[in-house]
Image (cartoon, rainbow, N blue to C red; front, side, top):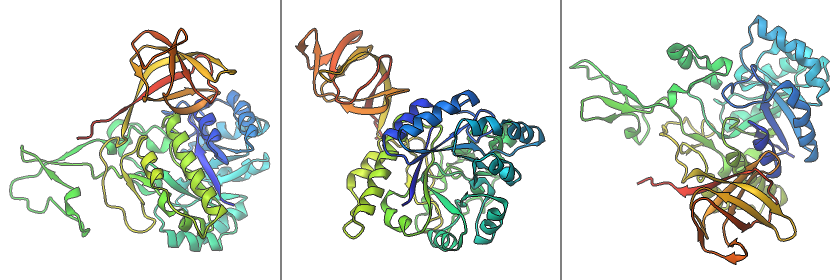
Length: 414
């Protein structure tokens, strides 16, 4: 049975992905992971993370996957005892030098995608060092992955959804070269996602170098000032929801969703969709069908458009900014929840009406999406409320005091 591995950037995201069916979660420790700009977790948080995951029977993997200099390597090694005592299941390592120490502390050693594992010979060597799993390179095709997984003496893991980096398995120097902020140390400012302009000297006819794909217009767009605008550094997001059967047959042990720096509603939505797809296929592979609403819902949260990365062909389409259908607006907070009637009292500082879609998020609640179908003020039904109102809303799922309330507003992409 394949594992669905979901990201947790904070306690709200942790609860959100677990509520939506994650078999395992991965998360960062301050100073040692590739998402330094996410909230992350402290050493003191780890026992709490482990306890929450235990409620769902889920496993926990701690990311320590930056390039470690001598100082950081020594610091991390000195913390392994504390990490182990918190009952975390394993570490995701980009430095194979710490595999032995990790295993000696009773922790699983998972080798990061940063190691760019591309063949079964590397996997055999990693087994000798004590690794239990390796995340395979993002540059592999599905056929190559299937062959490697078949020969591998240890578990293999692949990414199935989320951001794709412009560099080989994420090892990039662009942010460091421009800003002195190293992607390899978790501090990427993502200059690749920005809009770039090309200029050239008069008479240089070789500046536009189109690839051999059918649609050549995606690389360069001419501007009125004679320059050329491009997003060629910024790939679309990966989305493999339409290829679950092919992925399941590959023999890979774990499907990984990227997105520790993204919002809890993103984690909840994506995890829930992949959970449903995987369960549906496992229950009845012969009659398995892709649901149209899966892609519809995946496009409702943050995305840069979708591609299949290197799984079937070399990706060529570039992305713009967020392509989601909705903007998430902060509109209120939960005042109380009444279990007997299944209703929440909300303090609203924006307009709200019947039919609006809201998201409620909290550390214990996780992330819940709900469409407003009933509202009351002082016991009287209302169709809409104005700013600075307290309103009762029927919500079947329990929410908690001080949870955040957001309204989804349809984006104008015209």
